[in-house]
Structure formats: C-alpha cells, structure tokens
Length: 119
Image (cartoon, rainbow, N blue to C red):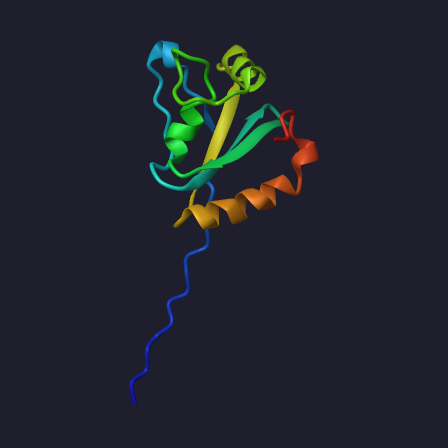
C-alpha cells in the first residue's frame, strides 16, 4: 500500500512593519518580487492596502513620478505617501499565486472603513 503524505501549506505570514523608504535618499523597498499584498500605516492610522502580481513594482507606484514607477492614477495617495515618507510604515505578504493575493486582499477589504484610502 502506497501512503502519500499530504503536505499542509505553511500559513501565510506578514512581514514586520518597516519604514517606507525615501526614493530621494536611495531607500530600498523590501517586498515580494511576485504576487502578494501590502499595507501602509501612519502611526496607528491605517492608510491603504493593495495587491500586485509583482508586489515590489506595485508598491513603487505609491510614490509620484519620476521617483516612483508604474501608472497608478491616484495623485491623492501618491501625494500623501510622499508627504509622510519619513513616518509611514509598510508590511507585505508574499503569496503563492495572483489568485491567493486576491483572496488575501479580500480579507483586508472587509475592514476598508478603517483605512484613510479604502480603495
């Protein structure tokens, strides 16, 4: 009889909170290069959340050009992040697939009223 052990997937774990890097000072953003979620806060105030197929690149679009990357069309978010760059903190969650990132972002979305920028 062949017994195949079932592997139980490791539970997803958020990174620790880190200061959002200042691109003007050549700060380094540490985020998954693949699918994942992110969350930003300013003190105890939750600021925003999101997901990306390439989380690091998506987070780079939170800063206005030419400092940031991507084509995010939300100048209010970008302006807020840049104005508060010295105090905003972020954390990330690496996911195994874009679909898993969508599910995890859905958990954050349930509390969207708690965020300064809920979408």
